[in-house]
Length: 87
Image (cartoon, rainbow, N blue to C red; front, side, top):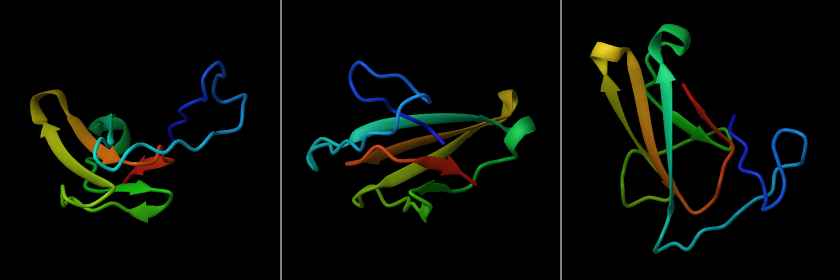
C-alpha cells in the first residue's frame, strides 16, 4: 500500500488523509514492481477494488512491462489517492 501524507505530515506514523483531485485533472500515480520480488503484475486495485484499464474511467491503470529489467510498471489516474496495490 502507498501512503500520501497530508501537507506537513509523514507516513506511516500519521493516519492517511483522503485527497480528491478534479475530475478534469486526475492525479497520476506510477508504481514500479520488481518482477523477481512481486511476480509480473497484471492488475491494480484501489481501495481493494479492481481498477479498469479503460482510460475514460476513474480510476484507471495501464500496465507495461520492461522485460529486460524485469519490471512491471503501472501508470494509474484517479480522482482519489488510494490505497493502491498490484496483483
